[in-house]
Amino acid sequence: MKPMIIGIAGGTGSGKTTLTRRLKQRFGSAVSVISHDNYYKRHDELSYEQRCRLNYDHPDAFETDLLVEHLAALRRGEAIDCPVYDFTRHNRSDETLHIAPSPVILVEGILIFAEPKLRDLMDIKIFVDTDADVRILRRVVRDVKKRGRSLESIVSQYLATVKPMHEQFVEPSKRYADLIVPEGGRNPVALDLIERRVEHHLARCRRPGPGGARRGGKGRPGTRQP
Image 1 (tube, rainbow, N blue to C red):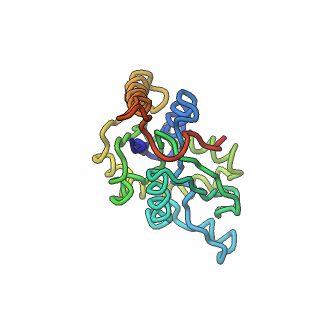
Image 2: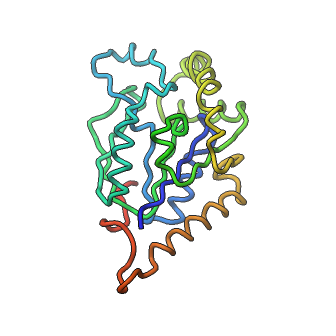
Image 3: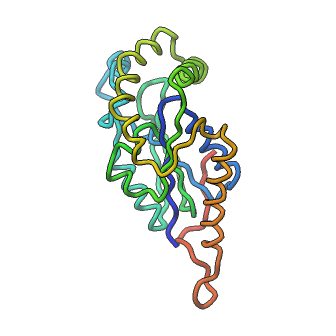
């Protein structure tokens, strides 16, 4: 049986990562996680100051074709080496993240539903919907603590690109969602529904097929992700 690909989209600070983390904790090695953020394009040709001024909230900022290739490989049962993006340098790092095939693949990112070729690969599309004031506050805390940003730079980026790109690309992509979840991983009812759907898929993967063989891909479920 082919892996089930679940897309988790939503605006910055909406709770996508929280929901993804809850599902990963619940199902462990049966779930692989891929972040669209890691597919930001490499810009070694630009200085740090120039990279700071790029628009990171437009679909063109991502190497989405590579992500599509990687998802297709995982669906075939092949492992991939996912790029790793360094937010402190505004550039892709030289590290990679080895991800093995698994029965369930979670793909999270702000713009994953805005790209038809990526969206069409997903079996379930979940949009995490959270008020704008909550999202910006979460973004401020995250970027200061984890990404070494100044408050001034966060506000400037939010007004210049994050807010307008959200209105132009992220919010309209909500119409493609199969399920809209308020507050993501902090919504126990929605989390329970999603977990039950994943459990159903995993049970089908474990069910013996003709001749007693187990269904599933070529690789053993699992990933070397943290």
